[in-house]
Image 1 (cartoon, rainbow, N blue to C red):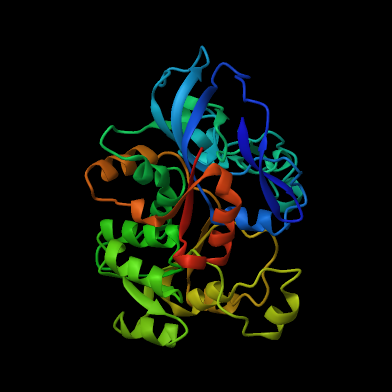
Image 2 (spheres, rainbow, N blue to C red):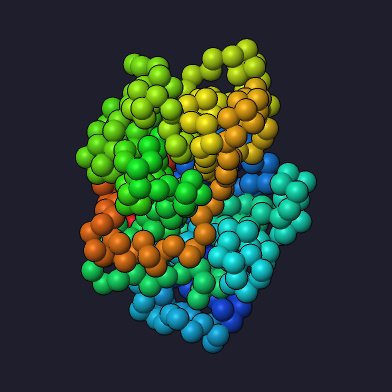
Length: 382
């Protein structure tokens, strides 16, 4: 079969790779219909993951049709259209039983690999190096899905592929951000980043009844999407003082919930300029801590593989802020989000700004990486 592989030095290529096979009784094989680029792929493309090997198949978000199921699969059969969550979770460990699928103890293919970095093994994930707890990804014609009764969710007939695809990762991540922030009616929410996750975080906050959502970014086309599709207020950080503007829009107190869901603004400190190679630059995180009201909550989404410098710990403690983080979403919200999609409460197809055949996936990733031609997400069809 054909699949998009990392081939070294940040290069991608569509190659012939072996067809996946059932390995366990709870597996299914899915014929991919749609797969999408993901921001978590960008560090891989930049060569920042030393565990990545030539031939690793990328793709964390995908949707397809079940073509084969193991004998212990109960919820799916051949012909079912399913969306597959980015995290691979067993469904039976302590964390899964608590609904924390992204903390599953048994989903990783190599549970010892991440202990040195995270203090505990990373969850299994599609489209990540095997040595980092991953499985062959969805930028392929076929994918093996372990623990299919947990990881795969049947898509309602009325929900189209381009909409349902975002229930794999981006939509549940956005919903989780609003949940971690405990967004309530009347809250003012600020989101840094108007990519797919940022837009869906804003939409989740609106659906939870907040008073207003402000999304901070610098890309005009994304800010227009925020206003049109998420019901949020756009804020261009290059044209205004973000913290002052957020205070003005929240009665002088600052945002109740601040969510960091994006890359960073330009460097402002010497530590940023000279430490960028060895540490991540938390410009947006610093801004979120300073912009959040006293007693508020700051939520950090996505992975950062290093250590941050110049973190404003004093502001965090003096203001009694709660700091929450999530690298990947759980699977428990996927059925609910699909139901909202079926009722037209949650529309996501506009995020698929570029639709390409799998053969053109390297071009799609270049557009996505550079945010060129208004690209929010590139979607591939095998």
